[in-house]
Image 1 (cartoon, rainbow, N blue to C red):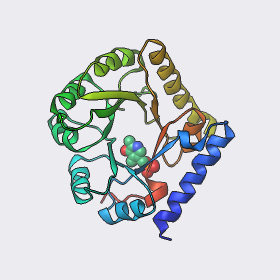
Image 2: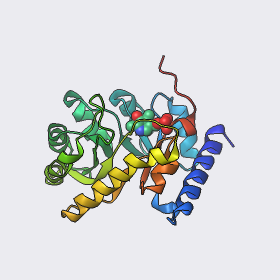
Image 3: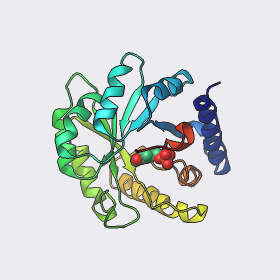
Image 4: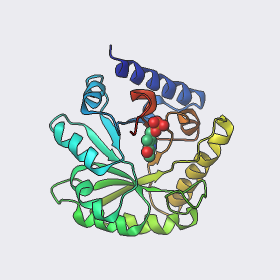
Amino acid sequence: MSAIADNLQAVQARISNAAAAVGRSPESVRLLAVSKTWPLACVLDAAEAGQRAFGENYVQEGIDKIAAVSGRNLEWHFIGPLQSNKTKPVAEHFDWVHSIDRLKIAERLSAQRPAYLAPLQVCVQINVSGEASKSGCAPDEALALCRAVAALPGLQLRGLMAIPEPTDDLQAQRIPFRKLRELREQICAAGLPLDTLSMGMSHDLEAAVAEGATIVRIGTAIFGERNYA
Ligand SMILES: *Cc1c(COP(=O)(O)O)cnc(C)c1O
């Protein structure tokens, strides 16, 4: 077995254990393999091992990989910051976008989504840690943004996404994930059915699963340490 196949198995085991610890079924958590910065060969290796969903942060890198594997029935999620001048290729080639943080981006993606494709599946990114530098919509503006996004014809609003400040303590990791879960509950109670919580990365997936993650976004634990040089 390849190292990537081994790592995928180990990550699936972490998900299963974390789910079992809180009485959730492991099937209620989807694994998104974050392949940013890794060459196509790594994506193909993971796909051979049965991985279907891949996450990318950079538009051109993602588009190149999607073009190279067309016909393999993989699912592509855009998870990085998105500038308004880059929305068109994302609307045309990706299946999901997790990083909607303002209405303008959502409106452009909706208008640019080709009619022959299913609506783009989207999450609104929430700034749960509160630092001014972090991207994401403020929690108290989330309901209004979700309502506006849900009304756009080219998009299907699925849920919320967050990238909390990293910390090593499991209990501290759970706090922002709990905030995101509670925010989803409030938005559901306001009449918008959200089925997705996109939260948890290599270092905090256990905390995220404990708080109800339905998609975990895992890069390093599958592909290794990234080298941005
Ligand atoms: C890079 C990235 C990940 C994966 O992080 P790892 O720590 O490598 O698992 C997940 N989500 C987002 C938004 C990312 O940019």
